[in-house]
Amino acid sequence: MRTLGYAVLSLLSREDLSGYDLKRWMERPLGYFWSAKHSQIYPELARLEDEGFVTHRVVEQQGKPDKKVFAITAEGREALKAWVTEPPVGRAPRDELILKAYSMWLAEPGAAAVLFEEQGRLHEEQLRHYKATEAWMEENWGGSPEKMDFDDFASYAALRRGIGYERDYAEWCRWVAAGLKERLSG
Image 1 (cartoon, rainbow, N blue to C red):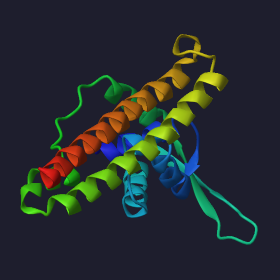
Image 2 (cartoon, one colour):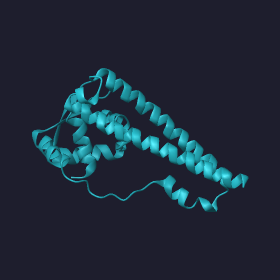
Image 3 (spheres, rainbow, N blue to C red):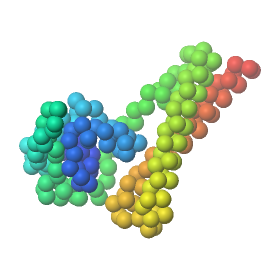
């Protein structure tokens, strides 16, 4: 099974969802560590259903087309349970901004500084959103990680990694922009 399949099963293990709802959940809360497009989600749902890991039911809607709501099967839950404790498959790092940083010596330093300042602002904005989510979780889920239910703690742990990522990335962008500005004034 592909990792996307496990991401879908992870969401369905918490609640039944339509394809649209899966896409929305992949934007938040999973967006800080996993994302997928509609064009990826629906074929993956079909594969998971063919393999017996999910099933669906049709829900009628007033004034809208009927929708399929997917649920994880016992077989899907067992596959997810086994996968959770396996070491992750190595992944090739792919980050366009880091690739641009590697080649920025070809660019005009002022234009490159603007790019990195803007990217830093975007990461700071995401960091603020994650920090607000963290505060909400702590307030509504027991006050501290030690008091959270296990499934809430799992969500909180993933969010904490997202917070660290955004914090580090924003700091790196500020550092690059400052280094570029020094070259302009020097």
